[in-house]
Every structure is written in structure tokens, then in C-alpha cells.
Length: 238
Image (cartoon, rainbow, N blue to C red; front, side, top):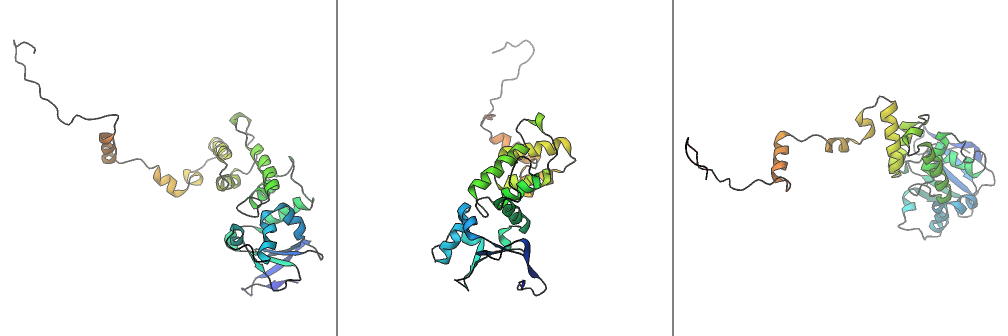
């Protein structure tokens, strides 16, 4: 049954596919509510395996506690986890993950880039922490952007992939994406670098540049310049 949230104008909708009557875990993400099998998720996920520990009072102070809140009103019924907006987890990404887990759309080399990126992001240690699935999604994601620029196909969503590569610290993939953006699109540097990074790369003023040159150990200036005696016609050189 759909239930109102704190905002009466917004209803949490039961997912049309991933709402199983025999499910043992209710998961709220944005305005979607999933009812799935906790044993399946906890078998693959550190986050969901920790849900049981939290229910028993053993999850205090863990990183997983920051992403979800457990509703213990009915300890005998399904576990209830609410993923808060600050977790930045999207319902569409959770749906993509469940498509893989329930074999409706398992990850493969033929998977669309959007599907791979959704699974990669939501399965990361920063989110729902599915180590094996995350590793597989990462392999497929890296294959989209090979390190050799000559083999770029440029048919992947570069602007969607860039923030994911940045968030997950995939430096080699990020460089490949930026190279592809540079060579195939009309882009502004603000689209690539954070504002503070762009500001840090601003050229120095002439006074700052002169000051840094004067202080550089590679170009020392003598503290005192000795003046040579003035030469007159017919005088010998010293």
C-alpha cells in the first residue's frame, strides 16, 4: 500500500516490478518503495548485511549508518530501510542493481552504458557496497574508455560518465573521458574542472610572478653588485 511521506503532496509508490509479497526487506529510495529479499541482498552487500547488525544494536558508528535509517517498529515483519536524500542514491540506480540481482538485465559486455553506470555507482563502497558486482561493473565501465586514444569510439555518454569517474577516483578513465571531450565536443573548462580548481590555475600577476622569480633558488640574485671602474680611452684593462 502506498503511504504518504512527511510531505502530504508526495506519495511513496510501490515499485511495479520489484515489490514481492514474500519480500523480507522494504527499501525506500526517493519516491519509490521496493520490497525485496533481504537474504539475497545481504549475501552480496556489506551495507545490507550490516542492516541485521543494526537491528540487533551492533551498527553504532559505522559508515553504513549514514546512508540508511532502519525502521524497527515491527521487528517480526520485514526490515524497513529508508535511504535518505543526502545519500544521493537514485531509485533508477537501485532498479538497475535489482535488474542484475534478479537476472532481468544482468551485466554483460552488451549492457547499455547507462545501465552499467547506474550499477557501478550504486554498488560502490560509498553507497550500497556490493563488492563483486561493483568490480564487474568497473571492468565494463573501464572498457568503454580504453587508455589508447586511437581506439576511442566516442559513442558513450561522456558528460554522464565524467562525474562518476571523478567521484570514484578512476583517474585513468577520467583522463580518457576528458581527452574524448577535448577532441570531439565544444566544451568549456568549467565543464571539466571544479570552480576552485579553475581558480587555482589562474595566471599570476606580473608582480607575483616577479616576486616568485626573485625568490626562486634556481635564479639567485647577488646581494651586492660590485661596480667596475670606469674605463677611459687609452687606459689599460685591469
